[in-house]
Length: 343
Ligand code: OKS
Ligand code: ZN
Image 1 (cartoon, rainbow, N blue to C red):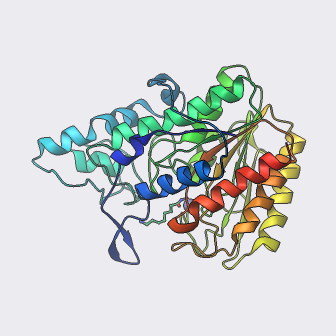
Image 2 (cartoon, protein in one colour; image 1 turned 30 degrees about the vertical axis):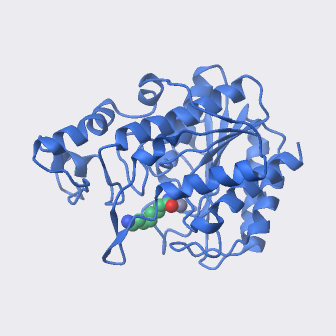
C-alpha cells in the first residue's frame, strides 16, 4: 500500500496539555508519526510519497473562513503581543455567553476551540496545512484507482469541526478528503472512525447530510472525552437522519466486544454502498495506550484490517490518535497489512 507522508509534522510540537488537573507534556508528539513511518518502511508496506500542495480551496469546502484565517494568523498575532511560547486557549463561549468573535487573540482562540488540547506554535500552521495535503494526496491516488492508500497525517483531525478545533485536532483531514471525493464526482462516501475517541468534528460536519455516512466506535462519552457528543441516539438530522451511527463502548472493552461493533458498522457501510471508504485510523484502542481504556492487542489490528478489507471498497486510511509510541507503528501498520492481505 502507498503511504503519503511529510516531515512537516515535526514543525508542530506543543509542550503541555492539561490532563487530570496537571500540566503534562503533550501526548500528541512528533515521534508518533516517526514510529509509524519507520514501521511502514521496516515491513516494506509499499512506496512512501510526499504530498502535493492543494492550497486553501479544499479546506474552505469544509471549514469556516474566519476559522481558517484565525489559524493562519494566530502565531503572528501572538508574537505581536510579545509572547514567544506556546499559545493555549482558556475561555470558551459556554451557555448564555455571547457567540461573538472578540478582537484579541485570547478571545478568538476560545471562540474557535472547545478545549485546551490544541497548542499553537510557530510551525503549527505549516504542519496542519501539510497534514491536509497528506490526506488530499491520498484521496487523489484513490481517485486514480488505488484500492487502498495510507495518509500518514499528523496532527490528527477528527475532533475539528467546521469552525472549532480541539483534542489535538486543527483541520479535519478525513472530512476534507471526503468532501474532495464528492466534489470530484463521488455520490456517497462512508467514514469509519475506529479511533478510541468519538470523532465529534467529523460527525458535526456531516450531521445534516446524506452524502456522507459517519460511523464511529469509541469510549462511551458518559465517561470519556469528548464527553459532549458520541451517544448512540445521535442518528443525524434533516436529510442526514439515518446516516450517522455511534457505537459507544464500556471501558475495558476488548476485541470480542469491539469487533461486534465493527461488524455492525460494516453492515451499515455495505448497505450504504458508498463509492469509497475513509477510515479515521486511531490506534489508541490499544491495551497499553496511556490515555485510553480499551484492551485491543497488536494482533487484533490485523483482524481489523481484514474486516475492513472484506468490504471490497476503495479505502483511504487517515491517521488519527494513538499514544503508546513504542507500539503505534506495529498497530497502525498491522491494520494496513491486514487490509492488504484480503485484496
Ligand atoms: C486533554 C486531552 C483529552 C484527550 C484528547 C483525545 C485526543 C485523541 N488535554 N482523539 O482521538 O486521541
Ligand atoms: Zn483518540
